[in-house]
Amino acid sequence: MDRTVKVISKNFKKYNVESIDEYIKLGGFSALKKAFDLGPKGIINELKISDLKGRGGAAFPTGKKWEQATKVPGDRKIIICNADEGEPATFKDRYLLEYDPFKVIEGMTIAGITFNANEGFIYIREEYKYLHDKFKKAIQLTKENNYLGQNILNTGFNFDITVFSGAGAYVCGESTALIESIEGKSGRPRLKLARTSEKGLYDLPTLANNIETLAAVATILEIGGEEYAKYGTKNSKGTKLISLCGNINKPGAYEVPFGITLKEIIYDIGGGVKNGNALKFLQLGGASGPIVPASMIDLKYCYNELNANGINIGSGAILVADETNKVVDFLKSVQDFFLHESCGKCTPCREGNRQITKIINRFVNDEASIEDLKTIEKFANVMKYASFCGLGKTAPTALLSAIKHFPIEFYQHIKTVRKTS
Image (spheres, rainbow, N blue to C red):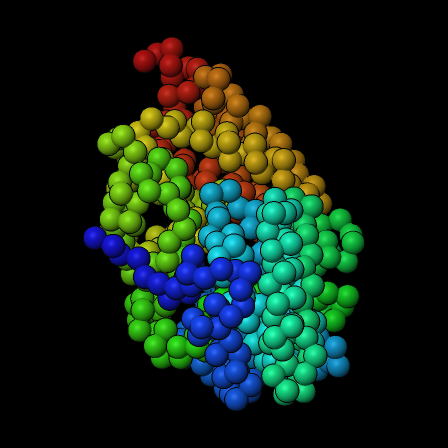
């Protein structure tokens, strides 16, 4: 039974991305035309009706965010599209870049109309280098057809987009670190003395959104906020692009309505666990997300139910691990990633990741002690509450959730326990 939907993803693999005419035949740029008719207030009203929340992980209401941004004064304003998809197990944004770049451009331009901005930047991760030139080609085609650039559709509105490549740093997915990177500085998070909408890129008013959010905006204006809100649940309206991977028969990027269960995602959409093995756990939201035991797969994939159980949707990644996976081995791979990607700016993250990695290695090598288990949990909680940015705060999420749901697996790797058992 196919539980997926085609709303934001309806154009995937349906047209040649080097042909703007094919995109237009599919209804492309109808949302942009509607945006000029609606104006900023009308656009924001549609977003509020849709109840769209930021799809980059923060889940802040987009309509509210844009409304607040429009109240910021300034003669020069900037739009940023965050396509720095560096979260392990996350690849759904790549599908937007690869299979529907014009929709992303359309969404960014609508943001420009709303925020009265004439400049846009799309920050694409360095590992997607093969897509950089393709996206630049899409920008050029859009400009040649008067949907971007000077005097768009003879409205007098000007908006242009620049493609910016990251250097491969995961922390640049954080908006202020991304801004620092565009400015030519080391990609490290800023001290947030003011909102990005007030002082962002070059200290100018800046509206930054995840690429999926901007694609959703274009979709919502095309079909209407009320129509989009028909998908999902009462408190989690709409749809979500997910990245399904791991020990699963049908990995891939899918679009699902909120309210579907994790079990339906794994078995109806993903075709079940590979080789008929038993499901052991999931990791939701990428490397910074929690480990969810198989006993919780009847939970609905929506903000309310997951949040009530201490789980965040995050980037939309769903990694499936079967019974052949050891929890401590999995945590080692997660910890090695964060040790490598920590920018080193703050002590809790820099030293916390270093020390946790050392202790995790002792568990992997069956050399851990009871004291190690107490210490690793203490360090993880210090990182969670004292780190400067989201990387350090969420890096220990997998570890803390694993200790909660799989405590026995840690004891199995403790020397004294192994000797007495």
